[in-house]
Length: 153
Image 1 (tube, rainbow, N blue to C red):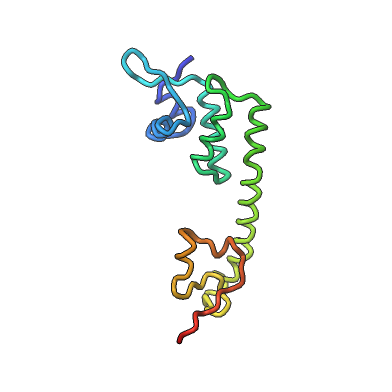
Image 2: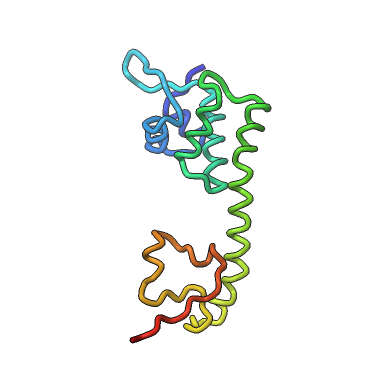
């Protein structure tokens, strides 16, 4: 049985625009009816469940797409295939847990005190030194010693 995009959207709890995007980037695929309407096999619901699970553990869509490449494209994954895929995600999940634990443990000291003390705050970034390390909030993840204020000549 094939599902229309509206039926798939309703069953998966995702907007049609998201389904079209997922199809565009290769996470799911459809066939076309004589009237050029998308039709999805029912097992697409399982692939969407895998995508959702991957997103919930913080995987980027590109990584999820790589993982889906190892799964069959003509049916839902079986237990063994799902186990292999989930095992490949385990190290990422473990790293996320460690990162969130560090964030939780450091958050109270920073937000809790309310002072953002420049001599002990791990978020202090004199001279925007962190910009050279790339985008994103890396200082909390690194759990490093507070940065020293730059010396003035």
